Length: 388
Image 1 (cartoon, rainbow, N blue to C red):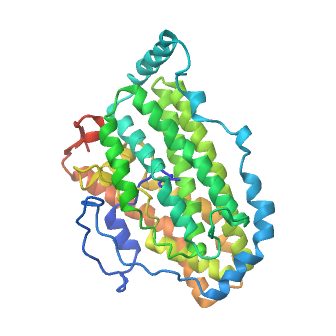
Image 2 (image 1 turned 90 degrees about the vertical axis):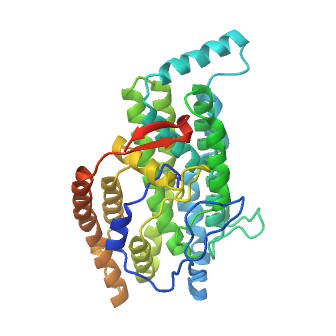
Image 3 (image 1 turned 90 degrees about the horizontal axis):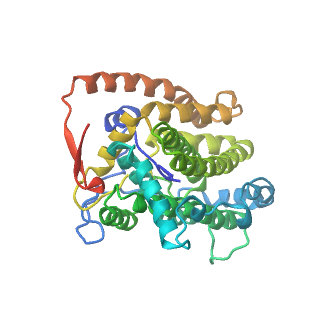
């Protein structure tokens, strides 16, 4: 996931777009930033509603357990059929000379990749490595949580197995980056430490309607981002890294399919409730999971990482609009009928949003062309400066 893989690789729309798309909500006041060793610099969180799903809706998810067992759990892969990180990196069990030769070959391939690529790849890895936060978020959704850690509910089975599959992503990228010698692992590890301590603020309100809309979007975003990093690695002469990123992208695509199926089912059994949830999440905008990223030095690290990803074509504002259009089509939102007035308002908002995003993007790009380029140093690449 990043949930931004999502999860992810993972970026957000420019702030001014959010102000244009999302109306002000007075109950979301700012709270003072934390001043502690755990989270010293990430931006302050907003106060959020919690447990917003009406209690009677719990029965919806109870009634869908049989359906989830038949339609969602089959999208998991048995462990024995899953790839493992060791298959993609030098084999440390080989005699030293052979292992050293494999590491040397890896380093020679990565020498062809620019520093900008490594900033994006590190951001993807950091996003994937904050997996404990994402499992916690999903496991806090009312009606689908794993109440005691080994629940046989299909919702709980899915969450545990999804986490296990996702866990391989950060492990593989971390090992590859470590062996490449191109990045400062101490700074990267500190970034992961800060990020897990800071948590995330997706606005899902312990509400599985909102949660599954968020994960549907986020898994597709990480699929897109990892797919683009695979393409760039191949173009720059590292076919092994291209295969790594492509393999991770395939996992994200399969996970996206699972979460999107859940939302499809909710639209079938509770069209207004599901449509309102989609509208709610899109009005807030999908905040990428690593938005509280911090390395102990740059308080705008996520913003700067996102700018590099936008420029490299790994994840762009166009991708955001494309994902929204894809989900509108997959869920057949424009054709949805039988909605209440509230549901119809949400339908109109969501279906008109991609066009508004693209117009705002054109204005943002025009302003960006008039701005003077400036340099930003990234601790992840030994404080080298990149021009943004």
